[in-house]
Image (tube, rainbow, N blue to C red; front, side, top):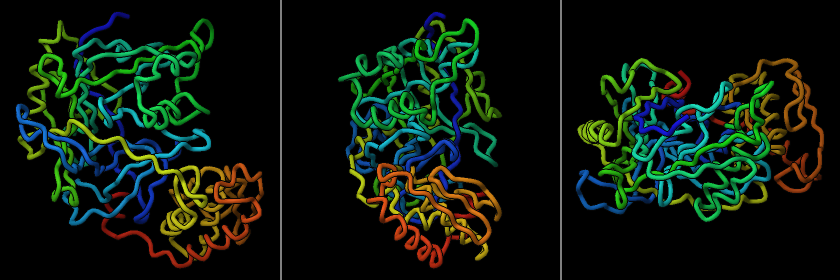
Length: 415
């Protein structure tokens, strides 16, 4: 397959991540699925496409599947966020079951690699985009008839890589942050967005598949005047957030699409620049600035009482308890503590009371019965294995006193 200049409408899950209470939103696991966060970060933006960049705190919709500090949005706007997130990261003990962040809009240049570059039939055109291609990452939101945008990615350069050589090829190219939150889950321990399973017969083995890391054009180093950006707001407008902007470009965007991608091959870069300019105009006409840089999220080594996904016992227990709708389900919240010891997975949808089998942390739940297995202090993540009983007792006490979600945000997030 030959490299081509394309404009791409790239659909990814647009739901806002479910949060039970303020605190740490743990690293997203496979069962939760991908989602969006409204992120607060030091960064840089343009008020006009030809204006000088302004440094300051900005707010924007994006993907960040690693942990974040979450606080409730003040006076949420229609289709805006319920929660404002400050991203951070730490190296987990294992990437097993963790989702990656792709695209990645932090640091000196935007990155995109992996997602939808292969199917069971082989590589797609997304694996073979040429310099000057424009990818519009966005979603079809429930109740809205149009395509809504969160990231514009302009391809400036790329590096091909695979499981056997990615560390060598990408060394010195990507940050430690990107290596942890994107490449780690992608290549390590069957992470969330793993490479597709190898085909049978004559298909290439997974280890032999090649992916392409795309490096985004910047405002300082554009491609034919085009650069990567995300719609954003600044300073005082961050606390309320904003609804993701609607983009309507007939012939390039299909507003009814809910997943997958639309590829529009072009003869050359000149064929895609008018589309980029129209996207810029529509974003700015909706009162938004162009975010061109977000600082790399800080490394925050987990405290000894945090799970591999970043939650404390208290936060994980609150997460489960706030979603249990009756006293009869309090025993289910014990699974928070058990799964926390393994990888911090909370109860994201309350299980039916009854036999639900063994959870990943060695916990089985039955009516009125709690079982737990100690599987070694290396998997505990909150201290020595001998402290396990205290963890469960503390989690249960917290569950009894949890107050639950704000009603309005609960309605918006879960409906």
